[in-house]
Amino acid sequence: MGVQYPDSPFLLPTIGQPTVIYPLKLADEYKDYPENKLSVRKVLFDAFGGHYTQLGQYSHAMLSAVSRDLTKNIARTMNTLHDEVEFAFDQNIGRPNDWKSVRLEAAVLRMVALMNGRVLVGLPLSREDAFIEATTQYTSRAYKFADRLKSYPYGTRWAVGPFLYRSTVKRYQDEVARMLEPLINQRMAGKTISEDNDHGQVEAGEMIGWTMQYYKPGEMSYHRIAVDQLMISFSSIHTSTVTLLQALFDLAARPEYMEPLREEIREHSGDGRLDKYSVVKLKKLDSFMKESQRLNPQTHIAMIRKTTGSVKLSIGPELPNDTMLAVSTWESNNGPSIENPEIFDGFRFANMRGTPGNETKFQLAGTGRYATGFGFGDHACPGRFFAINEMKIIFAYLLDNYDMKAPNGRPQNLHKPTGTLYPDPMAEVLFKSRKIAT
Image 1 (tube, one colour):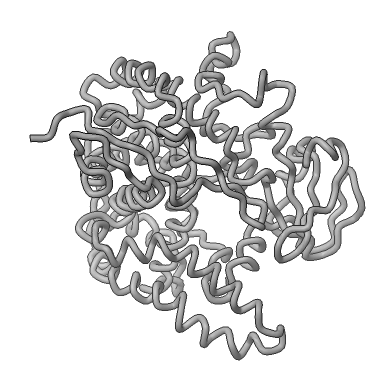
Image 2 (spheres, helix red, strand yellow):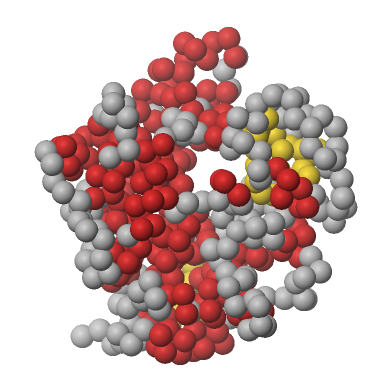
């Protein structure tokens, strides 16, 4: 795609509507366009029936809580994640003394949901099956709702939409609102938010409290808070699951990386627990995950936007209102700066960081023209540091407690008609505990 048209835009026939694909060099130009010119939210709003699901609608409270409070309290979130990771593995992998086959997608999805929930709402709600189902299934239910609504003639959607909404998506919203009501009431009654420190944990309902402080008068309701919690889950659970799953498939198929990664983790975390200081020293682990992301991108395009009026970029024709556009990521993943790009080199980026001047470059959390995995510019993912720490804690715990292998080689990726690439949800790998269970 990016090879055939390296310097000019082209039209890609994608599901829903065609997308104008620009060369990567335009990423620096259009990342600075404001939301009211090139809109990310409009993409989500149209794809997921935002009138009803509210996906794609702006939430100042939710964004502020994630970008300010969640990031500021990174030390306590890591303590909380560590406290949950053992339970997550016990529930989804177990402690097999002999090799056990595990369908990894289902296990990782539930582990990520458990750990996310532990920080976002806390115990005991985060471990309840109904809450886990609501947060993990909301994205697919919202997409199916929007897809079904679009199957009706445009002129009838106003009548059909409310009925479909009540029978599908609204059920999850109402259920989450009901489950969150006690936590919301506690915060409304004046329960204080803990002071930030490096040793405590995030308390049950604290993330809700962070969100509540940013609502304007008249905005806050049980339903509004529930939808914002579902939006956070929408933004984090599935992206983290896919990224982590791809990296674990790569590790299972390449066991030679396991011991060097274990040695690095042991060197920087004496008690086996990562904190905000030790996690940044795991250059090999960061590199391995970034290399996996490079070779297994969730899509070959990035920075997807919709025009809200006519827009003329520096190359190509003027784009009319409601045009979908994106940049090709082929060059960033396979371009001349990547030596032997077709080969998986797990420590590629760790070695590149060894060059003077590159010490802080080429990190998984980095954003830029050549690092669009977590967005770029004003729309870079504000929760990416939390998500990456969560994935590294899972990765480190697995390496310390399990051996893993893929006897049939790395599971092949699958391709959706939308152009996205995703790991095989039915693929199984083998696990065995490194510590004999008694």
